[in-house]
Length: 325
Image 1 (cartoon, one colour):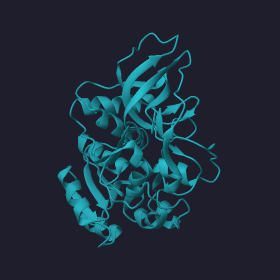
Image 2 (cartoon, rainbow, N blue to C red):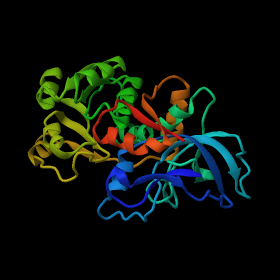
Image 3 (cartoon, rainbow, N blue to C red):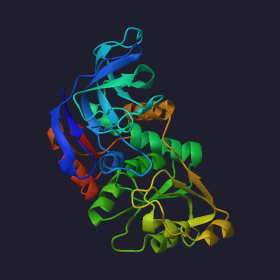
Image 4 (cartoon, one colour):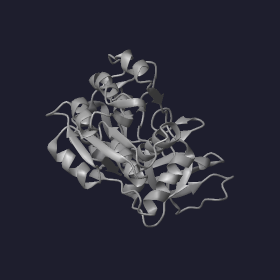
């Protein structure tokens, strides 16, 4: 098969489109012929290298996968060749695309217990936009953050995959959503998705703007998976007793902070790691019911994976960048 292979960690010049051995299924595995694979910041971290997380090279990243089953293991009985699937990439053996060979290839091996049926009314591109972003948002907002109708939520980095998922989930349950992004164009698109208020943090201080929008009361929930310079100011936006949620640190994992806001306002700072099979399956079901509408930014062929990762690094996208083998 063909694959976008990371030959060694570093820049995009180390991604090579070349032949790779076809995967073979174990007894409880299937082989999925990849029809679409969504990019995530994790793919960039795997390619660049992450301190404390060694990845054997050469390697194939890509965890957001949708396709058709093309082979099944000897003990697989509930799935058949031709079934349309997406999947939960967080397996008992490790994360597909991080510890296990991923989906930026024509085929990928998947443990059968991680499969999720892709309904016929969802495209493969949509299927590849759901698992990591919407699964992560579902766990973070509802299992950890207890978001409910009538609450006000600030979403930082709202134009990316998890950000858009958070905006859509917030509106789905009846929350008031303030979406912050880095350009007027992205803010317009977020408003079109249903955000009640938008903040262009390239032109105004998001903390001050949120304080004004909330009539100096603060918000119930803050979603911050960017970290970096946004961390300390985001604490100022939360109301007394508010919840600050984080599931990543795309702009830096060692930010300055101000502990006074945490103790004076009795804030709950809650981490959320990954997602479950149920989070992914529910997200797929909501999309099939029309309650969620994953946004596809761009669709590129497998041989242009490096170009697609550059778009992500440059933040030149809105929604999900999809790779199509």
